View 1: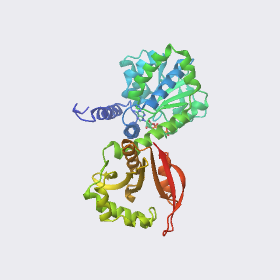
View 2: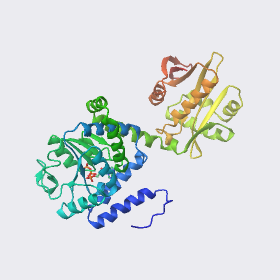
View 3: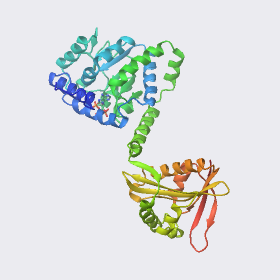
Length: 405
Ligand code: ATP
């Protein structure tokens, strides 16, 4: 294998790639094994290359299923065998559950034997699945072959990496299937009874620890088994991934919220005018010109916040504390190319912090009846409609919204 510098920021990832490629050349990993590995890596980036708390719950559910099983089996393909041999052997001893070689692509006795021998060289006492004679019903070709003393007899099958077709056939055969698959949208993940959306190199040791912990706790095991809902797990993982993607500009320091200064006035005026033209701000806001904003910059009790994206202004919000203890949010603007990224929410949250720190008990604002997007944002932040206003001289109706702090 190539020399990978230990201080390379992605040394582990590079080592795993090299491992997969090395064992592909040795005939343990399928020709398409590196592609499957790459697909996993892509999803692991989105996951943050760490096991999320919500996935740990699925790991406990899987551990409970394995402990409650009459005949659990761990099905091991080429990729899994070379990525985490010791961890899989440890898990198999801890449950206990036998290991069975599972080869989907290009199944040959030679490859089955190589994988089994490799696991034995790493400490496994027995490996099933070499030249197996039983068949998964309804699966054609050699991919349906399973060991008569292993998967054929099993009631629970753990499949760290599997093909969707085989997963579906195993479930249809009446097996409870636990998959480990980084892609929550793969057919395997969707068809399994529970999917662990994690890299198997992290998930397998965590599964072993969960098995040890749950062994003494039958009540919790039952509760985990009874509440197992793969659709819920998949949706929660997808939500987690989506929120990581959405938070990207914030987590990477691309968006900052700061007090406005003179240098932001041009942006504030231009962005305000664009919003008036598109109809998301009322014509009353034509008063927002350079002089008007410059004046506000210097006034006590008035707060103007600017959001920047990668150093460029992209939104602003301004408002003031009133004598009656309310904070009046005069405007909240996000320039068009920066919408949908959570920048409006970030400004609004900062405004709320300011209002609280100034001792205000409520925030109030007026927004155009026609501007649904703004209303949705305020509703999301728990602002409630309090009434309607028509301002003389302008054909605009406003909703007054408020939020108690
Ligand atoms: P389907 O389940 O829809 O048939 P697929 O065609 O991608 O999906 P395979 O190629 O058999 O199925 O399986 C590879 C799966 O394993 C991919 O979904 C990939 O995300 C996942 N995967 C690859 N490496 C890892 C890993 N180290 N840990 C967990 N999952 C991984």
